Length: 241
Image (cartoon, rainbow, N blue to C red):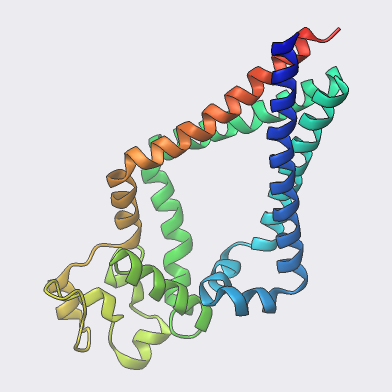
């Protein structure tokens, strides 16, 4: 009985934390959707460019609703010893866990397919918007500066872009000087070919693989917490009268 009460208390506290995180995400999502300019002023151009690709506000609202629902079901089910709420909590968490595993498998098995798909989307956007849309240009400059990369595949992604058409030069990140990590002169095609700076997609994959232990540890930790929550909810469900 003492073990049951302890697990029940821990279940309530754990899901209360999830509930509060859901409320926070929901509040931020509503704020971004209703008052986007204030959000952009606080978090800068990177947030603006991110909002251009994905509607961050709606994503945060959706994530907040899911976490809020999970936290509520977990707390309510444990506190009131409601079997229906506990079982619903278990199945929602199980669906999330399966989706995460499926996404990991797809990422590992279909990396090349994902690269080809993204190439069809990203490269035309670069050729169309780089140099003409401020937010789009800023996010790519920030990405290339942070990852020390050039374009999605390489410097050829910028051929025909508004920036290239205007200056007949590639972004300086495509001609990085290996000695000091900067490009001091105009980045011409010849210099870009000589520098051979790799694309951001490959650089991102390289960084992920380099930090595979950390990424895998975080993923395993999240998966472990989800499994533990499912086990606890099923334990409470099976031990309720």
